[in-house]
Image (cartoon, rainbow over all chains, first blue to last red; front, side, top):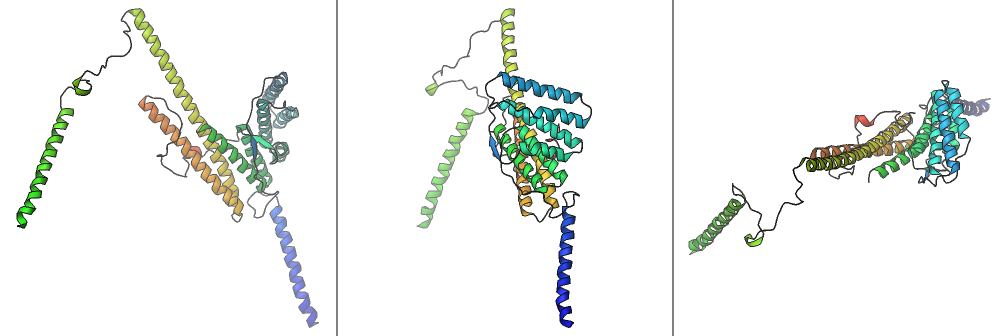
Amino acid sequence: MTRRAHLGRPWIAALALALGLSFGLAACTDDSGLGEAGEVGSELDARLETHVVLPGAPSAEGLAYVRAVATAHAKADAEPDLGARASVLERALEQAPPADDGSAELLRYNLAARAAQTRLDADQPERALTLLQPLLAPERSLPVDRASARGLVLLGDAAARTGDANLAMGSYARALEILTMLLEEVEP
Amino acid sequence: MNRPAMTSPTRFSLLALALALGLSGSACDARGGTHTISPTGPNGVDSGLAPQGGFEGESMAELAARLEKLVESQDAMVAAANQDTDKCEDTCELSRSICDVKTKMCRIADEQVTNDEFQNLCRKAKQRCGDASQSCIRCVEHHERASQNGDGADCRGESSAPESTEPPAAAEQPEASASE
């Protein structure tokens, strides 16, 4: 009996420890803001690959894209409901810009940023994440421009609001790099 | 024996000092005072200095043409000055955006004090914000000085500018970079 008792106590202590850890982890992963220690949703990834924006030669395709984006912005302006406004912008995002057209590429990033901002304003950070993550993935080369920097800041905001501190920090760090590059361009 | 040996160099020194003072005094007299200095070349020969440009005339038409020319050059100067202002606006806007991002990053880092990677990123962001703010301040100060002096300005930084890592209050406006 005595022996059993001696063997049983550590087992109970181990079980209690395991339960405690489980509860502790559950509390940490509970979506209640970024303040919780150990709260992570992804790995910290601040990789940044960039390219210089080249305007490209004017083309009929490029012009059609500019018109489509301008129409989408105008429609969104006229839409009072935030969700519907975001949907208008997201639909326009489905159209791909012509290849090798830097101006069209920037229009697309601006469009995505506005759509994401609208989702955040509508208190839908998950939708903003879904929209921005593929466009601003660390594996993708981003144009050195305010549009991509703004997109990264919004991605960070959306991640922070969903409790993904690593994604938020990585996105902000990448935005900081692009903004610094832009500042260096302005200041010789 | 020693006394004359000591006195002789002292006398020479006094003499040399007096001569030097006398010479420098006369030199000062030649340059300063109320003398009118005429533009002459070496050995008093006329240097050939003369008013530049042709006679612009005094008739109404000639004066009108002259006025037009001056207005044109003023417009060009104003345009150049405005371009410089735009450069400062760009610099300061980017500086604000950098400091906004810094605020967001350090807020997250403050909430996870044990995360070394976050702490390092926050420190780096603070450094960038400080540098960017200094760029903005230097640009504005340089532009203001140049405006006061009446010449063109650009936003190039100056190494003599005060160094500080603390951004100015104006650079700390949250949400500016992410606003629509």
